[in-house]
Image 1: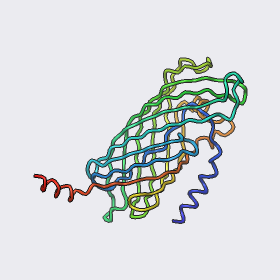
Image 2: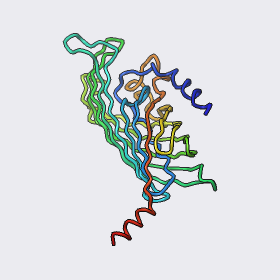
Image 3: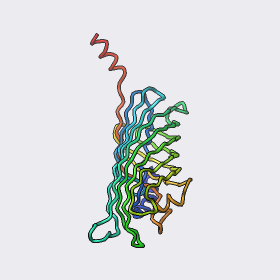
Image 4: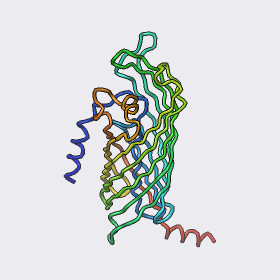
Length: 263
């Protein structure tokens, strides 16, 4: 468990780098399923680089197939003041996604697993923010994404650790803005999001820490302009969140006994 303080220390270096932007990714849903008819759910706070409130759920249909769902809500005031008649800048964002995938044990002890998930999401962003150069911008947009997420993880009775590499194709459209730079435009981005997640606790309840990075791969100039602090572009893309995870696994033997008794 020596990894815990190291993991936390590295991530804490970036906690003060957040800024108001048009788009923030959600924290990554890492199912880490390992049994049939198992539910794993989590709730977490994004402290840097992702939305503030993140809820995730995953359910294993059988011993190899899982379905997932996530919701993100983000609301934050800007550190920059807008004109007195308009008040403080803000950023409100709402997002939901769903997907499905595959997981499989790769060792005899059933401790190491691989997983691969994919899905799609839809979101809405509403912003009024002031920038350091005194430009005051109002911007609203809808966006959707497609993602693919392979990963590997280790799990035991007291903790699980995973590494996931999510590739996200993002389309921002229907933009209404007070700035002619963004008005009635559409943007297409491709991001890579390498992420490490650590959960520690009992079999049914664990706390988690997650850190990662959002690396723009397509139309990087516009992505940086819309979604990062110009003075801290690298730090602005670091992600860190904390939360809890719960796990329920259906007892199939008891269920079968109950069905026999009922009949």
